[in-house]
Image 1: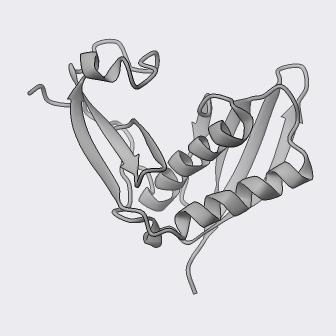
Image 2 (image 1 turned 90 degrees about the vertical axis):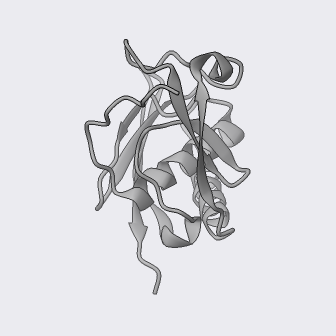
Length: 155
């Protein structure tokens, strides 16, 4: 089996795993793609999505509630290694870098989400804490919704 590409950044595993959950929840609620831009940090993070409308307050609240409900399921986060050929029927490979290894890593958050990723993740969603949306804004011209969030430690 090929070796994986080197990873050039270090994520905060709880926040990065939350990104996966938020992406799947956005797909489920809005039928959009995964975030096209992401800035994931320990204190706060932001994700940009292409949408056809600015989410309502109710939709934003539903997003936060759904992400927290998924986190509370204490889902195991696992990985599997497959070839790019196997991945083609399951994933969008357009984000793979030029010269990507033939072997790719699939990260699964329980049965809720799976995607190609080489980042760091928690072993179980019980390690994440509480997801809080701290702000969001809409760019009508670009049809871009930017979400900013943080994680609160479990008490």
